Structure formats: C-alpha cells, structure tokens
Length: 576
Image 1 (cartoon, rainbow, N blue to C red):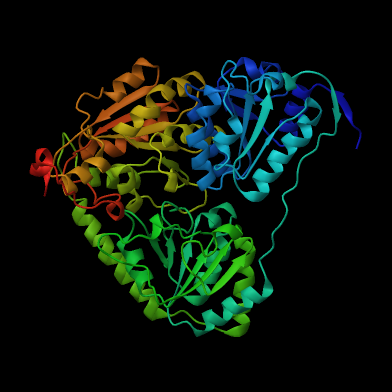
Image 2 (image 1 turned 90 degrees about the vertical axis):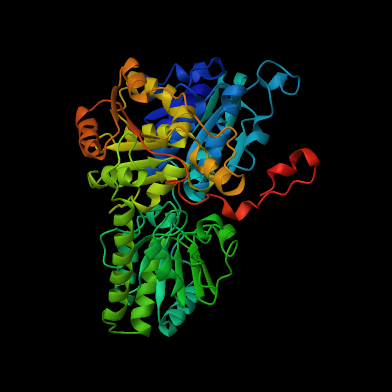
C-alpha cells in the first residue's frame, strides 16, 4: 500500500473516514481546530453539544446501538476532563468509544500552562487502551490503534494529542482496522459445559449484555428451546432475550422481575452468557435472595478478566458468546439427543410469570392523578411504545422502577447507565442513539433530578441539530432514591432530597424550540407518547408523579447502609 504525504490533521481525519466515522460529538476548541476544519470536506458531521459529558454519552449511545466505534472530541484540559464520568460509563458498558483529547503543546508539558493537566492519568482506569501521540508522524498509526483496540477489546480508548502535533508533514498508509474473531472458546471447556448440562435437572440461562453485543439472541433462543431452559436478563439488559418468548422470565436485579428471580432460585445449573455477573446486579431484591449458591455455574465472556471475578464457576470459557452458544448446542445435542419440551418447566415459568403479572397489576391499578402514581404511569407509557423503540434510561428511583416494565424483542434497544450509575446519562446517550438510528423512536427516561443535570441544556442541542429525541421526565420533586434512604434509615429527616421548585420542563422545552407536553393523569399518558413520536421534533413530556414513602421503591443500596448510631450528646436525639 502506497504511503501518502499529508499533514497529521489530514492523517487523523482520513483515519476517521477509513473507520466509517460520519459523526463526531463535541464542543469546538482551538486545540484541534486544524483537524476540525477538514470535517466538512471529509463528509464528517460535527455535532456540537452543550456540555462535553453529553458528547461522550452520545458517542457511547451511538456505539451501543450500532456495535461500531464512535468518536467524541473536546478542548484540552477542562473540556477533556468533562469526558471522565461518561468514559467510565462506556467502560462498564464495554462500549467502543474513541475519545480524542488534544492537550497542551508538547514543549509545554509539565510547565503548568493554560488548561494543562495530565490527561493520561484521568482516563487510565476507564479505558481499555490509551496513547499519547509523541510525534505528528505517528498520527495515523496511533489513531488506527485506538480503533483496533476499541473494536477488539470492546471498550473505550483515548487518543491524546499534544496540540502542536496536528501540524507538520507525515507519510503514512490509511486503511480500516480488522475485527479479529475470538471463536467459540476452548473445545474442552465447551465439552465440559455440555457434561454439566447433561446432568442438570433445572438449567437456567442468564443472558447478559454480551448477548446483545454479539447479536446472539437466535443462538441463545435455540439453546434455551432445546433444553427448555428458562432465560433471565441480567440487570439493566432487558434487550438480551425477547420478552414475548415462552421461556422469557424478565430481568433480575434491582426493581426487576420477581418471576425471573424466583425461577433463577430453582436452578441447579446456571448458564451465564456474555456477563461478568456483577455484584450489584445479583444482590437480593424484594427480600428474595435469589442466587442459588449450590447451583453449578457455566460462565462465558469475551473478557478473561471478568471470569470468576464475582462468582466462582465450574466451567469458564473465553469466547464469542454467539459462537459459544451455537457450538454448545451441538455438543448438547450429541450428548443428549432428541430432547423434547419439558412441559413441567414451561408450566412453572407460566405460573411464575402470571403470579408476577398479577402483582404488577395490583401495583398499577391506581387511578390517582395530579400527581399520578408512578407505577401506573410506567405501565401506561411503556405499553404504547412501538416495537423497535430504543429507550435510554438514567439512574434513580423511577429510572430503576421501570426495570420491571421495559420489554424488548430485539437487541441494542435498552441503553442504560448500568453499574456506573451516573445521573445525567440518558439524554446524551439518547441523542447518540437517534443520530445512529434516525428512523426509530428514541426515548430518554429520567427523573426530574437527573434531567436537571443534563437534559435541560441538551434540549438546545437536539433543537439546533434536529435530533428528535423524546425525553420522558418523571417529576416527583425529589431525589427519590436518596429520599428513600432518609425515610428508612434517617427518621424522615430530609437533607437535600427535596426539589420543590423545579420548573415546568415542558414549558422550558417550548421556550427552547422543542415540543413540550405536561401530563398528570394516567389517561393522558398514551396519547402524549404517541403525539411526541408523531411530531418528529425534539419533545419533552413532563409527567407529574407522586413521590414520598408511599410509592418509592425499596432502598437502592440497602447493602451499603446501616442504621445510624450517634454517641455525642448533641446528636443522640438522632438515634433510631
């Protein structure tokens, strides 16, 4: 391949083109302006946001719904620093975000110059690969490496560029980096897994985020159907098995499906596919300690670092979960040929689903209005979503509550803050999802506290850039998750939990040029969602819902809190 003479800025931009980048999220800055000037001629759309954190979340959302690397860029120093939390969210989501972080010029590094801080240290723990460009002549090589590592290590990477290295001349090749197949994993591991399955009485499949990332639903379905194995989704991965399938039991974890948790509790073998089995996602919920400690465990993931980290398994496999599931099914069919449907298991699943559905119906039965009961509200808006809708969810009490309501049939539809749990995630991520998938509805669901962190200002971005995201804001005028802790552990002493003066977010959206709809009655919910989707405009639905002790979900971090004890005389009256 012929080497071409170009500037480092041209080398960077041509590498983006070779990697299929058509959109870059960020805020304009002088540090990378020489490269930015080339974007229009390279047919790259620059999407300017209101805050850099939203740019990184947008790149994350784009990457998650496409499975392809996506880029964000910021000014050196404070601009790059605003990526840190969002990059960590991408890290825990195994999302291939490539963050380009220009920095202080190479000759000024370490002198305490304008907007200087060590940007490599900032991202050391939240990237799968990071590199500082030591010379402009290596721009294309190291940019390529960032894309290669993002694709093949399934995570965010950082390309750190001293601002003087955009200038000069270099010679390099421009080409697309490959994705290297991992295969199904070790044959011996798969054979051992098949032996465990042969001996199992009640196998249950735990379908993790890796199933969605590997487009492995058909393979997981085939395995589940042959074994008549119930399937539960891991925490906040409701899109990893079709909800309408007869073996689908729903998500485990906080505010998830009691049916799924009760079914998992019965397992004598767990087949964990594409999941690290994170500790928070397997905590006891609803007073159900649902993880079956005596069950055998098979765990498959592409990342060897997560195997056995949270749960000790009997068989580990490092492989592509799509290929692993297909290979495992063949081994099981050889070991146990001619399996027929286990009607007893199917009936058990039906019974548990009905029991959970009946309980949900009781929770959802309130006709209360002004404000609405939150569970009735969640039942109403989730049931009218078109089948292909993508939903980005934030963190907090209402955002967690909907874990039991969101049901998907396909992959890459549930985009959540996951275990990083940073408030303000959903709106930025939803913008990236919508840019990537302009023909499907995209919802950003947040409570009013989280929406105030990011949604308010990014509506301006959505209007200016014509990104018709629909924000659904559950307004209960409180930080609900923290208020629940103060109710249960701190004697209803509310410090910082109430938000009594939040504005009407629907009216505020209209002032910004978006569509705004305020609702406070269950009968208004379905029409509001349909109207927002049909409008084709950025829209904010401000839903006024009830807050307080009567309706808040159980404590978010019961595992991390104890009843307070006070010894000093001035604080003794605060003892429980």
